[in-house]
Amino acid sequence: MFQKIEMMIQSVSKTIDANPFLYGIVAGLLLAVLVLFLLLLCLHRKSLSKLILKSGNEEIVVSVKAVRDVIQHVLEADGLFSMKKASFSGKETAVKIVLCVGLKANLETLGEPFSVLAEGMQAKIQQSLKDTFGLDKIESVKLHLTEVNPLPAEQVHS
Image 1 (cartoon, rainbow, N blue to C red):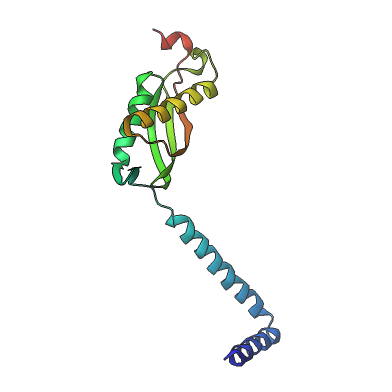
Image 2: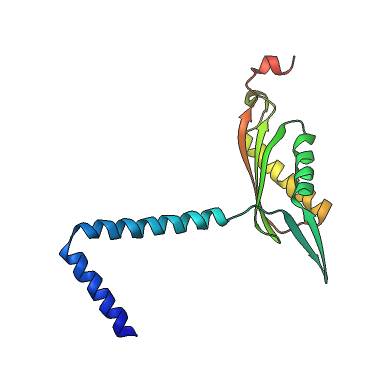
């Protein structure tokens, strides 16, 4: 069996050596297969639809919508942030959360850097999810600022 495979490889090799144009075709086909494989691998990653919380011998299933609602409430409680989009990835038991948020205040009126506000908000979100659902297996909460209130400082307070 291995002799047959070796003979086929030698036959293909001789054919390619006889016509150098085939090198490009073979390389192109290999590249196309590699690109398709990588695309399928990337597209296979899907967003979570539920989170599984284990407590002893029992499992509690929480929908991502419920988690999103709690996060939106935490974000909007201070009046500084609005949630534009939320995505959840990872495993059902260890979650990565990426939030696209809008900042309702002007950066000039904040009084502290956005990074300080973001760190505080991330901590509040994690604590709120732990208090509400007992969800403590959060790998990360990332805030992506997508929108800032463009009004100058004097117009925000009027």
